[in-house]
Length: 471
Ligand code: GLU
Image 1 (cartoon, rainbow, N blue to C red):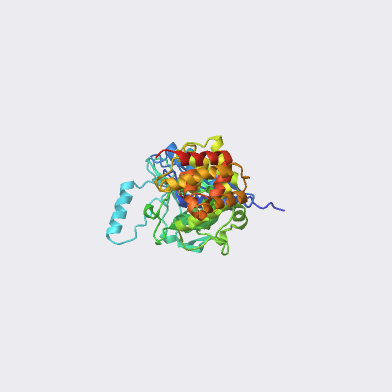
Image 2 (image 1 turned 60 degrees about the vertical axis):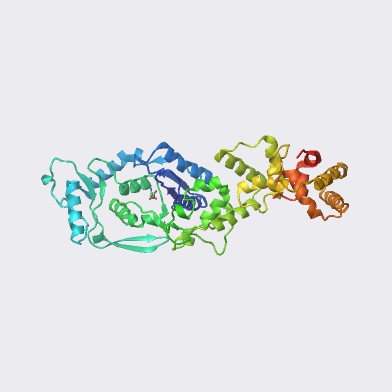
């Protein structure tokens, strides 16, 4: 019995300087599809545009992939390094009669197009060299063109778009190898995909027209065509093509905002793909559920509010050590000092009371400031307003009551309630001064949580300091 073919997908970004979220989503779809099916997921850098393909631009792609956790199999393939192979295939097609030498000079072709445009005629160029006998060939540079079918149709059976039909009389004999010996994009993609064994081409639908031309190469060469799946692009909330004015377009900008990678994966997976009404899911669920049938035909719209709520859900349900890893990565990425071991441990210890309502990593750090700060705790202006002579007096009194209290939530609650009551106050009145003393801020986790996290000694030291500080 024949072995079922192993699935091979790929992402083939051109290094543009950033990893666009559209590219990130395409990579994610390919990754999910292959990983869930025991397949391989490959990375090819389409670096034939030498001016744009700097090592930094390539690194930006790799950074985006790594941050999103999209591991690829084997080495990243450089398209540019494969130019000799592309040329070889063009010559092979020539030898097999699927292609021909075109000696038409570029300026002649341009002039034809110009005139056709001006006259409102089709600009489709039909080379006079298609059927020219070899004997008539001049000794001059030539391009290699595909001898494309003139009649009939090229039909693409697309897993997302359905059956898409292109009339062959609307497609010209595309150039595959230019007269300077460089391959065109159209040829390079097909040769690379074939040599890399790609079985599924899942990419943006801006490449749908290319699929027709690429299919002609597969068919001419008798190569097995991949499954095509062209995904609608991501639009802005207004339904227009995504641009900077809608929000960040680079995936690393989201990393720098402190969106956890797991949340970004969830959000991007759901952007243009659905599984019933599921909005929030783990990687394991995405892997189990993802398929090409769930990809919609309408462009998905970027919704930053939704991303925020997805991030909140992931933060709340992620385990503390995974969150600490995310925070460590976030600090490094944004050029902030790393946490000391003591800060790391205390923040991890505090995580249970920080993660429930936080929607980003910097929000966790902000709320967790009490665990990161070292004495003296300098209150900000809002917190300082709570530290008047009366409240400082009460804080000082509390230090002696807390000296011997057992360090548990119930006892702490009773002790503080009694302390407030002794002054005819509700506990709420004490919360402001306590927050100011313990965290130097007015937005913090509950006073009890802070006390439990930092412990008796540190609590007493902070209260004493706030009660006795000058000014
Ligand atoms: N290099 C192309 C791009 O970045 C992708 C080509 C492909 O996926 O076939 O849009």
